[in-house]
Image (cartoon, rainbow, N blue to C red; front, side, top):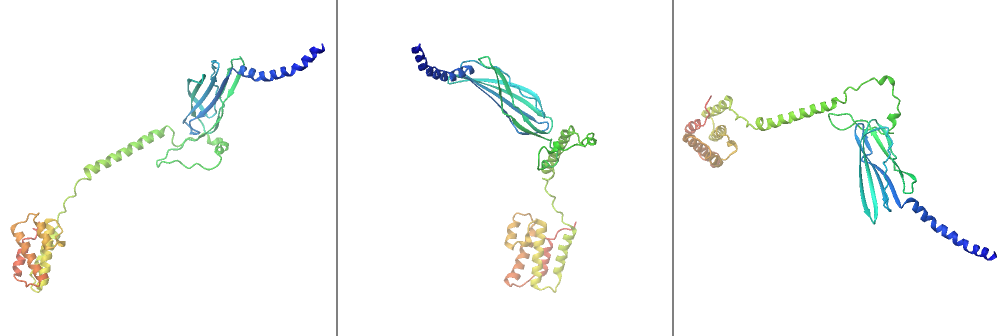
Length: 329
């Protein structure tokens, strides 16, 4: 008996070490070698009333032994959104002899009223290979729903007042104001936008039509007035004044010839030299008498004004200049 008691006292530490080493192996066997994850995400964190929000719930599991968990995610009903549609897809991949299955659920949520909303958490209740029910939960997401921005003809939205975004929800509303209706119903806004767009299109088409058909017409040639013709004839009559000196006569005659050419031919003859005038007249159609009058009058005036020459044939020069006078209508 003493020998048996001695052997028992010697081997009991070995049993203790074997128990501590086997404990982790038993825990791993209970889980079936599975790794499970649940994650939730949205495409935007702030929406207006009436806008859509896309919510994605991703359930991922990594199975070592080949078993597969089949479970649908449970999503709590939000307060500020309505669920309009659900779509689920699955994808299986094998990495390092491990099967990974990802089940993605897409929810289409439509904002119904303003305020702050905490979406989630989503949860999945499943049964592991050992037959034990387990539950896994996802993260939560905070989303803000704001009022619909009013339509403005000049574009841009009204600035949002600084402060707590929930202050509008905490402000008490007078019961007497509940029966009031907006001046412009929301159903009329699309019609008003369409009418405004049609008006802008009509104005653009009218401008293009005027630009290519109405605005492209060349301005009518200015019709000389009788006053201009009378002024030139009055200047010609003043050449008959015998008290005019030779220089004054030649200066007045040279100016008259240039003004008549400018009036009849349409170029700035007043600012041209005699040589420039002769070059320009080659492009114009003048009679023989008119060309003779221009040549003799300008050369005689230049000889007196710039070469200290003597003036002869004053009456002849006046008669030649008469061929350049415009006809009175």
